[in-house]
Length: 280
Ligand SMILES: *Cc1c(COP(=O)(O)O)cnc(C)c1O
Image (cartoon, rainbow, N blue to C red; front, side):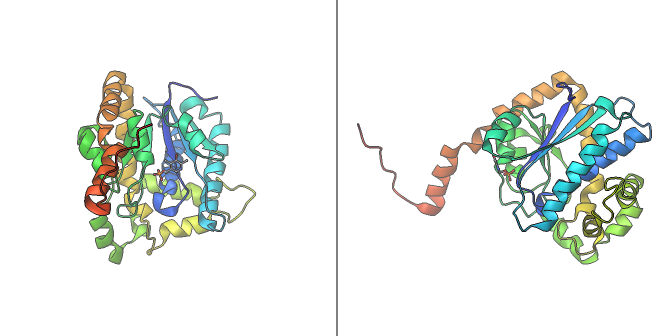
């Protein structure tokens, strides 16, 4: 059962490594770990919703979908967790599904590796519908944050320049070793807690996170992401302040109108002469 007053935390979009559904799953495992170790004082109940399709030949993306579903089964069936945390994978994500998901969402996950998302449009749809965004400085997140104000946006993670600069001496194993929460999350994954009876299933995912050449730098942003998520939970407890931020998001979404976008495109790129519609 899902509590309607829980924080509805949503990531719906095509499944791709650069969009980092994996980072979101690692946070879910961290929340699960906190509950299991009895560290759930002042807990804000969350429903973490995933949705999205992977291209047919994209093995790693398919495997990430499998991980989300396996983590969901473990978390949702654990009596110790109860209503504190629920994980949902919505099958067949499409516009018809988004029409329901979007207005029901409290927190919009826009957590791509900085420099990889050209713009995104899901981020705009959620903003217009009153969700708050947790996100990186990537694509239209940058403009969303400018419009709504930094105090109404949960920013985390490396900038595109920092991603490039850190590539040469990226050491995810050292990052994991340097943080207890991260070590515990990787420990649960490596112990096979989410693939009982399916040995080795998530080894390629573990290797991708620990690989020095991970282009998506999931490990690099883990600690900052967990910290930003903590701030989200804290903010959600103040219903009046959260509602104010939600309304400000809707109110500041005007820039993302298609009229403005197309007018600008025409001015800068197409340079076409507008034609008045034919009179009936
Ligand atoms: C908006 C939308 C997208 C694009 O989402 P992004 O977060 O911008 O990648 C993809 N699929 C559907 C069904 C959508 O409604």
